[in-house]
Image (tube, rainbow, N blue to C red; front, side, top):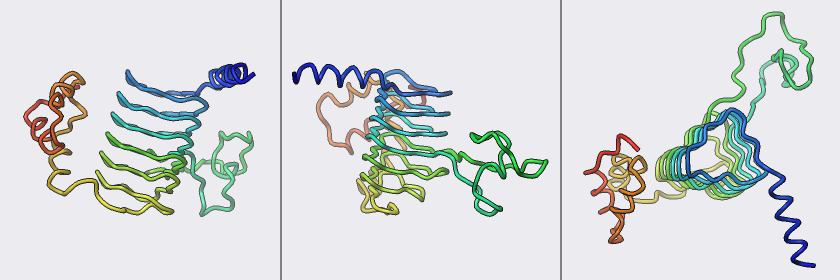
Length: 212
């Protein structure tokens, strides 16, 4: 009975596929089930868990995104008669427009830029217009309302910097190296003797990371 139930669960998950609308997905990217992505771009060797909701998000390379993460999405106009889109957007899900004859521009979906080598925990909300720097970590359940510095660890509601992953000098080397742009074979070669991260950064600085 348990085997039959497990088979049913697997089948249901496969049927509950993710929706990608106007998205650019690089090779070697894993996208979990039950997610909704609109106007997004995902870099190579990144993975995204299940039931995520992204709108106008650029995701870098080698990122690890857990499940139930919401990034971007539509905002609403708050300084008008109503926050309802029928007052400021001619084309809306309610198919009704009550606003002025000349529609005012309102940027509903401000872009979210997530760098490379970023780890985002489960049930994180990222406000539109936010930039998360390379190498950053966002703790589970966080609400990100401000830009996240590179190689910082942030958590909380709203998310705040808990600490930095490395010393400033090493962070500067890693950012300068842009190791994520190297060919994966070259990265594997540079890691063959299991060097420390600072030695790895020095090695990468001697490589050409402009392409990859």
